[in-house]
Image (tube, rainbow, N blue to C red; front, side, top):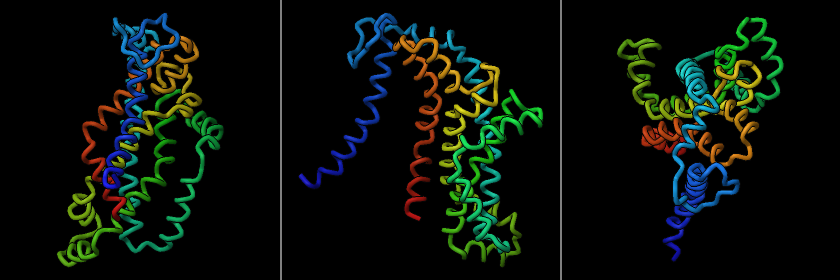
Length: 268
């Protein structure tokens, strides 16, 4: 019995994740007149609920805007986090320990505390009500974790790699791009997926810094959708599945790299 406990624990964990999704999916296919759908599969699935939710909430524009924000954040944040992590772990930078400790303070800073200053800053820069008003703050907010992640990866690599590259006459840039980056594919893939998920799920900044509903993220649009159709559980469930679908698809596509990166970081 004892040897089966890990398997039972994994099954229980899987069930705790899958059952809510099945409940939402079942609710999304119920007739819109059903205000209290359960886990029962509907006898006549209403697939049209997804089309109704898409049209009513304007998810086409919201998904496009959310994708622009996420795709604007991820590449820039990855580049900056990689360069900073490499510099703080490998290069002999004066005061790098103090600089890293100061940067880590950002992980303890709730971004809700800086929303109002960000609003006036974006207004003064003329970026208010544009996707850049969300992209630029998110890049800064994501930096502490990204630098910590990449610094941990580079610091865990054998010093012989950089020493051998130095002996061969490679400079810092060539060492990074030709020697260290090929080893960082799992770490970069995991970080990119986390960045995309966090940017895609952004709610508060998009709600405050963008007044045009069509330029906000999908979760922000879903929040307004809840206000209008909060009692229409099937339609609300269909909208929820539309919002989370891109994250699920990306995870399924990159799950091997994601799990490898997580395990690699855990082992290190």
